[in-house]
Image (tube, rainbow, N blue to C red; front, side):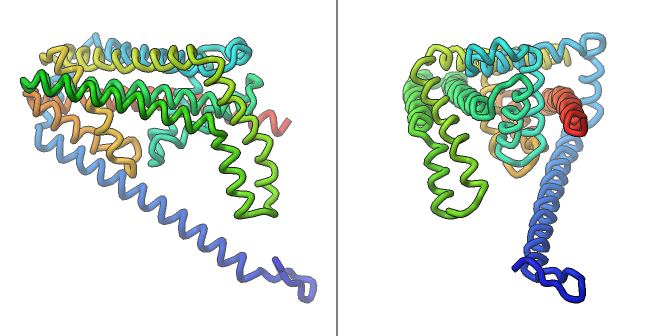
Length: 358
């Protein structure tokens, strides 16, 4: 019984009040955890600046001068490659409806949300699918395309990281060990990707829906999920059965994006007056990926990404101030691209709200 009436007034149900209090307390704890995590990351950044010296870092930043816009070119190309990879996972009809520029901005919006939320880089994925509905892409197809694209991204990233580990061993003068580990890691990457595809072809959404139905058989929202789950699984099966070439193209686009990231390291270091070999730039970019993923509770891996990146660069012989400048500029670039994504999201949200009011 949700409430009792007495003398014409509705008395609050203690159970409802308790549930609201619990939800409020849980939300408050999550916010406090996020604030503390960000504060911890900023403290690490402050310590790095103090240790490396603000003056040497600022001197390298000033050395860029008029060439500063060139710092954004590599990642802009990465963004386009990733958007193209996502495009290949959509149906032919959806590709014709969704403008590539809008698809790119939609992906940037989702990635911005991923950066700002400590959710293992998945918080923005449903948002990408939701924003595609403007171009009559169903929720099932949009979400399926996001899952497939993420799978292709993970596959390419795993291979990229495997190559980076082999490159590090080669850099340390262990060519035979590098070759052995490369073979093992590449086989693991292919097996892991095959496992992800196998799971997606086994109707995972329907299996999840059946579990929810057993747990809450009378819940109305569970009943509404049945059709969407079937459509989502159907799109996954259809894609992997009839469009394997599209998956390979998507993975290739993402892999090219990872390789362009190596160019970003070279461009930043050269423009700030430093020196780095292509091999070292490759190692830095490849091994920075697991470094970033190691701090899931901190939004954007603030501080921890820079700490791990500076350690890796100095291990390879780069001066500390030069290494910190590299990672601070990569962070500044990330903030700028996230701001563009969030601006697009704010505009789309305003448009949607305007349509609802109309």
